[in-house]
Image (cartoon, rainbow, N blue to C red; front, side, top):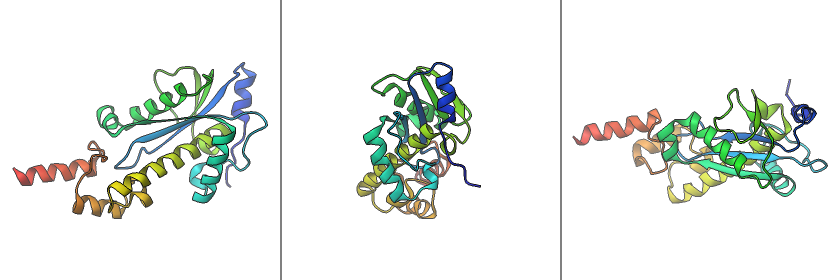
Length: 211
């Protein structure tokens, strides 16, 4: 049975005294290339776009349409953690860093955040609750998942223009067969995550061969 997100988590937070509640989600933990992207979204009463759902459950066309509505009707902040940061501090910490940056970027600082996942980032700027599979259960997180995914997909499509052959406009940097093949044939770009095993192994092989 398909889960439909609702506002029960937001309602519970309001009942505890929260006034400005933001949902936060990230996208891009699994790719071999590109940043990890997070969005913080504060939905406003009376202006909640219909049909919000986990971004993974929506078609690209539907995500784009909802992205436009969310950007027009909600308070939104988007942030990234770079490839260099991912390699330096690991992908989980980089994902959390992007989430905190997204929260800090909201024009009106939230007093409570609903975070997708089972762990809260360190250095949270406000009270927060982690919600497992929050993008499928919580309206604010569902909205954040849509904003983060559309933003990152568009960013990777732009990078694909600079580095053709890897299929980033289709795979968004994820480790598809096409991407693996391009890594072997075209090599590693500055946008690849060197701490990720497939990229690291190729670099190590190259160094071994050239010694």
